[in-house]
Length: 245
Image (cartoon, rainbow, N blue to C red; front, top):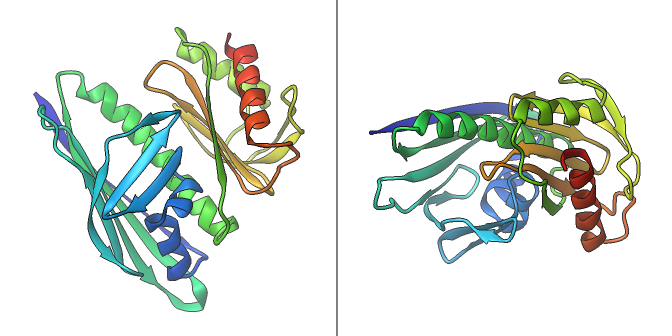
């Protein structure tokens, strides 16, 4: 047993079609809103997340300024995921962006995986919209760290939201993890398994990982008050250990 799925998402962004194209079809662009480190080369999209290489995704359409699509190979159990981006320029530098994610999830427990995927994709698309609205043309440094394994997810989310003052989408937040510069921004997205905060120079995200960890999957567009990539990672890992250990 398994499940075929299709998840369409659409938004109008205040960015040009050229800026949108860079964001969805180049490694540095994808680095700035998706997850981990990405490369688009030789007709393949490669992603390394948390030190692990995800299955390669073959580019199936590349029409600059119009359509970009790629899909993972179908596994022995039928599993695959395909992404399609449709770009339509509008007047005064705005663009309609449509992202359609489709595929097949095998197994009797596909509903649990589908829920996690749906929540994650909603966060990724919201991050893409935030990126194009506030940081278009800039390149982020991704920072990815994992908490200790979590047994009680409702409690974990209560702890995280408590650190941020129990915010709702649109609320301004301020928190100051030890070893990091104070972070002040607005909650641009939240659902049952994800939360994102936009600041003047970063997109901070917390995701319920499939491996049982809370994932800090951030995008930093400047030094952000930190002294370097390695120091940032260590500081976030220490904070995750403190909050969820």
